[in-house]
Length: 377
Figure 1 (cartoon, one colour):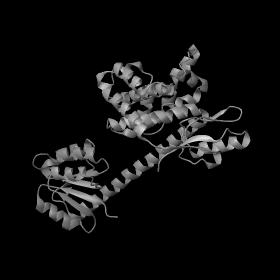
Figure 2 (cartoon, one colour):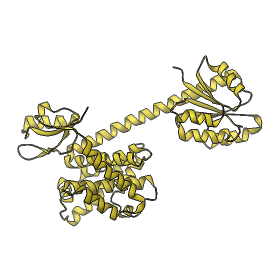
Figure 3 (cartoon, helix red, strand yellow):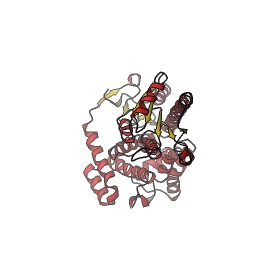
Figure 4 (cartoon, helix red, strand yellow):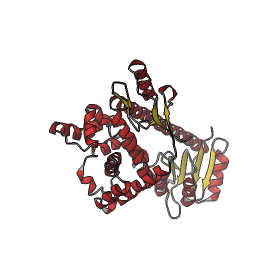
């Protein structure tokens, strides 16, 4: 596989020389100056290694590569410099912005080897990220599956909150949207330690005893303790831990963690109101009246979520368990003939949920057919 390498210099003759030297080993692209290079990157081009000259008109190589770090974080960055600029190059490396620096003139064999090292570093970066993402995805799936079995109502609520928050994060064009979506999905994981009837009281606006209230306010901290042990979920865990923080309604301070926690609050308030039969317009009006100006974009995003849902046209069917497929969504609670809840309205039918329904159907009997929503393909 030929990895794409970007060479940046203000001298076209120098760039042409690089192409002649390296084209038999790498896929070489050139840019005459930082502006042209950034234009290539922002157009969607991906590069394993980006090598820049230090001294160029306008933006120097260190400043340019700092911008590359933001625009293309997986690209390995290198700097070419003259002997007189060694101290500047060393400083750039020590600050963590540059992988290697080369001095001019650079021998062809040296340049080839250093680029090969950069390609290998790029491959390691990609491999580590993919491994972390797979590990993270698997960990989240296990946690949510456990919640779906231990407390179907809490899992169903988490599914709804995740869908709302995912829409809100996309609407406000938040960076790292996956963190906000996961915060919604995992926001109820602390409920694994709580009796299911507490959720009934929360949604039914029933009063709770002091001990029940103590357990309820502890669930975000329980979630944080569980999630903070998973790599890359530290910020998600913090968002979830702050979901009952009353100061969030007054200010978020443009802090992604506080914004995420506020999203959970607003999504929870909206979900509870809609489950209890409130009118969408009334809920949004009340939220606008109780929210500071800095958070109005979140309310507008929530308002548009309702429009998005109204436009969806998934089919709804009643099916027996033998005909239910993974990927469908329950439109009603699933109970045994004795009245035991085994899956909750709004829950996605995963392999584990379907197996649970089949096992209970064979052992105790389940009330069927069951109303399900079948997503459009």
